[in-house]
Length: 467
Image 1 (cartoon, rainbow, N blue to C red):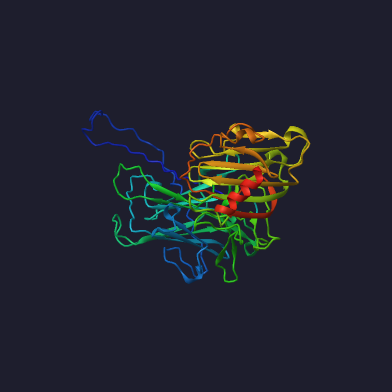
Image 2: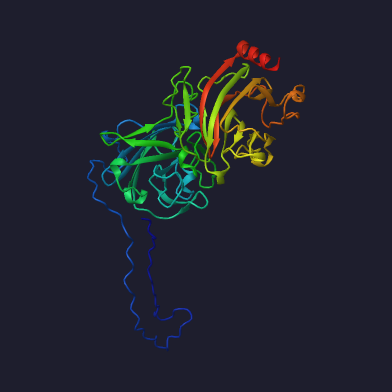
């Protein structure tokens, strides 16, 4: 369990030397009968680790293979990356992070995260909510650290204390651009993570990397790279891991024939079950748990802005907690924005049944639900089954619901759409690469009959729908 941590000491100094300023040499000093109590000793966590793994910044063979690789700037072409390893021990969870980077810098007067450092997040998969058993470890290349615990009410973290150990080792010359990187190692006992049966546990893991290129004491700049498509307050978007027979952890990725890892860094969240996504006509993908943000990427998305493309899917059985207003649909993902054609669920009558378009806010920091556009679909129950599609041609997007044009950015075509005003999409031009996928906001759903057409085939499909 979390513990409060403090140390107190009481100091009393009495100066009696003759000539001391403010004292008369002719006045005898008073006598004091007060005796200081012993200082309260700082609590030290010193477990007797018996796994054959020492927390010293050296990687033991027991760690096995990495559960995830994080590239700097989420660019797989980079030669700078982090490999993360976990080991499920008898007493607790071990983590090792191997940073490959030519720049390693540290200046002790700066905040920890303005030095070369990593941020590590751990939580049991038994719950998908941030709580006091969510542990965040910030550790610098020189082994300085801070510990933070989760706060469920705000989905954030506060500075606190939990039992644990950490160490770091620089590989090469510190404060140069000729280094090889640094290693981070830590240990957290199971009770701090709320795990009672380690053999059956699954751990959710998240990581971020702070890269700096100088040791100037006044410098407050860094390049922070976080795990793609993951959020600190949404553990369901983290990497899910389980224990292998050897004790080392295995990363559980959602990866099917159609949906999965895209372009080396865009991850499909593990709440998508792709076990039936087998590339056949009967392929199926299911959102198994309703979390606030869940994304799946189509592997065959166009990687060139010059391509025209058409993406279609059939969505069924939208569910989720009514209090969270669950929504799900298809997504056109751009570097500075994301545009989603969604259906609101669960299936209720009247104005609560709707289709709409939502995009990100101007900073691309969160979804702008306040300015979402939608059409009332009273009498329809689109939460049980609906066909959604999008066609992209240069600077224009066209969204279809059950083969009817509902929304478009094309001012000339907008009069043909159910929502007969052109969409205004920010930070979107004909030069932006587009990735297709699925987005869910607190919803569960099933997806079938999905496919992508490109170039001439996409153009022909679009013409057919508007004929």
